[in-house]
Every structure is written in C-alpha cells, then in structure tokens.
Image (tube, rainbow, N blue to C red):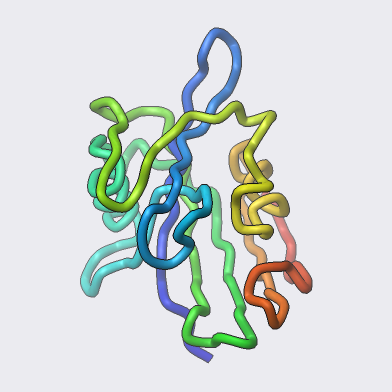
Length: 161
C-alpha cells in the first residue's frame, strides 16, 4: 500500500493568555471548503521540515525556520475506498515565525482558540488528534476512514510520548 508523504504545520500563539492556532479555510483542491492546517505534499528531494516551511510560506505568506519546528509526530490516513488518497502526514507545531499570515489562492487563514477548535468545519479525524498535537504530544497513529471518505472508522496504533 502506498501513502503519499505530506506535512501539516500548526502555528501557535498566546493572545492575552489564550492559546491560539492558525488554521485556514481551504479554497481549492483536496479538502476544499474545510478548515485545515497549513501544509501539503513533500516534493522529491525535500525533507518533511523543508516541506512544512515551504507550504506555510506558500499558503499564508509567513516564514518559519526549520529549527523553530516542534515535531508532533505522524498521522497516517488510510482511505480504503480511495487508496490513492492515502497519506503519511508529518505534524509540526511552531510558535515562532516572521511575517503576518495573509490569504493566498489556496487558503484563507484564521486564528482559533485551541480550546474551541472548529472541528465541525474540519475533517472529522481532526478531533481525534489535533488537540493532542497542540498540547505537546508526539503522535503515532493511523486513522482509517469509512467508505464515505469523510467519517472515521477507527483510530489505530495510538501512542503518544
């Protein structure tokens, strides 16, 4: 089984004592219409960290340095009904970057309180792992989707450090 390597990077900040995360409304392509993390495919010859930094810049116009990324682990997405959608996703969190997030052709970025994530507007799987990743856990899980390619059938190999 083949899993496409992708990355997600979650920029975080503290606003008057309230932790927030930058997410974005996906305007094009896979996940269109959903609130998602910043990220995308790892290009040939590129490390996961390089891809995360590149994608954040392309999608939100900010610069994140590799040394400012915290490894939050990996989520493997298994789409049994659409195996061409299978992804092995490296997760990163960063609380340092340069620039102000701005809208791109692909993403309309928006800050959300970590305690009130818009899970009803996200892929259903996000509720299973995003709060943990933002809370400092390093995840190693597999999310298996149902035949509808939207809802979660099961979460496997769940471990955190």
